[in-house]
Image 1 (cartoon, rainbow over the protein chains, first blue to last red):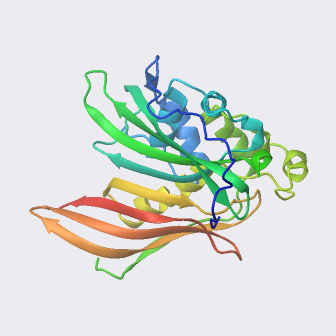
Image 2 (image 1 turned 135 degrees about the horizontal axis):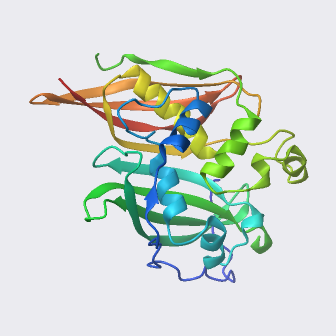
Length: 154
Length: 133
């Protein structure tokens, strides 16, 4: 996705930075689902009650205050146009546990319009999500970047 | 365990379309490109269902956990470079970049990747794991 200059008459992307992605319902990783998830990836679940670390992504994504389609719509983008994951980053303060309720908070960091050799025009959506215990103790912070192809603007 | 050492690979012989159906439920994401090859074809993305990106990342995490048993992932950063399709074989691996020790804890920095059979990397990134003695 190498870049050249944006056309000067291109409309700006929606101003979405700062919009809250806080969830309203705590997310709990069930031991049963963790077992199924582990088995689907070719490993056995941990015997000590820790959940598969990939729940950093699932718990935050499912537990945030919007669906993926809703997040795309907030960016004035139809999910049917095919958002693509570009990158994920996570920092854990403690392991994830099954049966533990987690609170999700977060916000949109930025939506940046860029030229793309492959896609014509694209928006890069960056958002941060945090998982904490009910008492506020931090568990992890994750930042995801999605590519929103803007083929109709190309 | 030393800088430059390869991490023991983790291999999936065939990425399962049935697994993608399960992941659609885990992720609450019914995107049909993970479920219906006809939709993938209609979108010009290939002719097989596309595995969910977080499932690919889970294979990479499995590699880290099996290569460094007892270690805890402190941080992980990846780029999603390409798709993985139903029926493909994938292999996760990596290399230890450097190790620093503070008291009874070692911090192990690694380059990591996931490759689909006969193709370049589909995930690339870095990971830091904590090892307690």
